[in-house]
Amino acid sequence: MKKLKLNKSFWFGIVFSLILYGIIRVLLTTGVLDDVAESTLILVCINVMLAVSLNLINGITGQFSIGHAGFMSIGAYVSAILTLNFDVPLVFALLIAGLVAALFGVLIGIPTLRLNGDYLAIATLGFGEIIRIVLLNTEYVGGASGLSGIPAETTWTIMFFFTLLTIVVINNFIRSSHGRACIAIRENEIAAEAMGINTTLYKVIAFSLGALFAGIAGGLSAHKFYVINPGSFNFLKSFEILVMVVLGGLGSTAGSILGAIVLTLLFTALQNTPELRMIIYSVILILMMIFRPKGLLGSTGLSFMKFGKKEAKPDDVISESSSS
Amino acid sequence: MEYFIQQLINGISVGSIYALIALGYTMVYGIIKLINFAHGDVFMVGSFIGLFSARYLASVGLPPVIVLIISLIISMTVSALLGISIERLAYKPLRKASRIAVLITAIGVSFFLEYSGVFVLGPQAKGFPEILNKKQYQLFGSSVQVDSNQIMILVTTVILMIILQYIVHRTKIGKAMRAVSYDMEAARLMGINVDRTISATFAIGSALAAAAGVIFGMTYNSVDPMMGVLPGLKAFVAAVLGGIGSVPGALVGGLLLGTVETEISSLGYSSWRDGVAFAVLILILIFKPSGLFGKNVREKV
Image 1 (cartoon, rainbow over the protein chains, first blue to last red):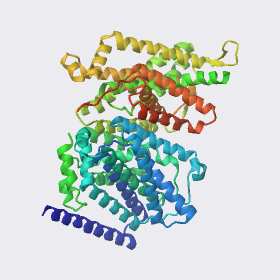
Image 2: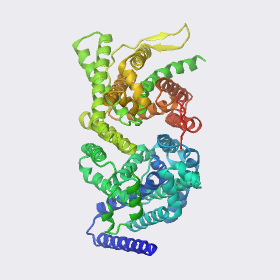
Image 3: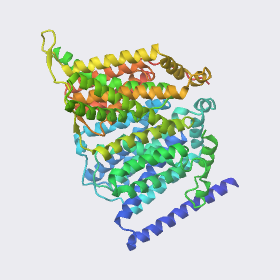
Image 4: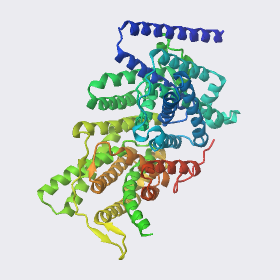
C-alpha cells in the first residue's frame, strides 16, 4: 500500500515537471522569455544537477567532499574534446564525459574514502586542485587559456531532461536498499559495518555516482558558455556548490534543488552590482548559517512537496530525525 | 650544491610565511575543530594594514627599523582585534551548531573579507613600500647569497615563535588554551573561561597571520585583496603536514612545504608548484593522516 503511494507521488512529480517543461518551452518559443532568461534557466538547471549530486555524497552518505568542481571540469573537458575534435553528438559526448568523471570518482574515491571528516574534505579539495593544475599544464587541452569555440548546443530541452534524469536516478538510488546503506554509513559508520554493510563499496558507489552527474553537468555548462579554462573550476566553484547544498538543507534532495535555484537567481539578480554582489552573498551566507544552520528545508519543508517537486519526502523525514 | 643551498635559503623564507599562517590554522583547529577558511584573508588584511602604517610612518621620517617594528605591531594588534570580532560575530553563535554550518560560515567570512577588500581598495595590486633597503651578503665566501630581507624574515619568525612558546607554555592563558583544546567540557568545569580562551586563540593566530602578511608584502612588494587565498590554502596544507593541532608541527610543516616548493620551481617545474603542495598533502593524508607531529587518535565504538 505504501509502495503504491510513493509510486503515485513519483509519477505526480514527473508529470508536474513535464508540464513545467512544456510551459517554459512554449514561453521560450513564443518569445515571452528572452535569451537571458533561457541562459538563467539553464544555469539554474546545471547548478541543480551539481547540488543534487553533491548532496548524495555529502548529505546522504555523509562523506564531506569539497572537490566537486574537479569532476565537473573532467566532464567539461572530455565532452568538449569529443565534440570539438571527434564530432561526437552532444548526448553521447555527455554520457562518455559522465562515465569518465565517474571513473575518476572511483580512482580518487578508493584511496581517499578511508579518511573521514575534515581529512576527507581536505583530500578532496586537494584532488580538485590537482585536477585543475594538471589541466593547466596539459598542452592538448589548451593549458591556461583552455578550450574555446565549443559548439553551444545546450538547449533548454537537453538541459531539462538531463536534470530530470539526475534527480530521478539519485532520488531512486537514495530510496533503494543501496541508498539506505549509504544513509546508515552517514549515521554511524562502525554500526553500519557491524550490520554487514560493505562501507567502502557504498562510499565509492555514492562518490562515483555523484561524480558521474557532476561530469555531465560540467559538459552541459561547457556547451553552453563556449569557453572553458581551468580557472573556472577552482575550489571556489566547489564551495559554491557546497553552499547550495548546505543552504538548502544537507541531506534533502528538495533542499538542494531549492538551494541551487535560490542562490543562482540571487547571483543573477545581483549581476548589475558586481562589486557588491559577493559582499551581499557572503553576508546572506553568514546570517543564514547563524539563524538557520540546518538550511532552508533542513527540518521542515514538507509543504513544499505539495507543489510536486519530485517527492523528496522520504529523505526529508530522515534528515529531520537525524540532523542533530 | 651551492645552488641547492641557495634554494634552501629561499625556501626557508617562503616557508616562514607559511609557518606563521599555519600556526593560526592549527591553533584554531586544535581548540574548536574548525578549519578557519577566513584565516588567509586575515593575513591579507594584516598585510594591507602594514602597508598603510608603513607608508604613513615612513612619510613622517622615522628610521626604517622603527617603521618596521611599529607597523608590525599596529598590523598585529588590528588583526588580533579583527580575529576576535570574527570569532564573536560569526563563530560564537554557532558553537552548538553542526561543524559543517561553522565551516560554511568561515567560507562566508572569507568571501566577505576578500570582496570588501576589492570594494574598498579596488582589485588592483598595490605596491608595498620598501621599508628596509635590500642588501646582499655572501655566505662563507661562497656564491650563496642571503639578502637583508631574508635575515629579517628569519629573525622576526624566530622572535615570534619564542613569544608564542612562552605564551603557550608559561602563561595562564596558554595553560587555559592547552586545557580547552584537550577537553573543552572538563576545562569549563574547572572554571576556565572557555569563550575568553577561544578569543585569545583567535587573537594570537590572527596576529601571527598579520605578521606573515607584512613579511609577505616586504618580500614580494605587491599586495592585493585576493592574495590570501592561495597562501592560506597552502598554509593549511602545511598545518596538516605537520599534524594539525600541533604548534611545532605547523612550524616544521611550513618550512618543509616552503623548501619543497622552492626546490620544485628551481628545477624548472614552477607551474606544477601548487600541484606538488597538494600532492604532498594527499600522500600525507593517505599514509599518515595525523601528520608528522600529530597524535594518533583511535576511533572507539
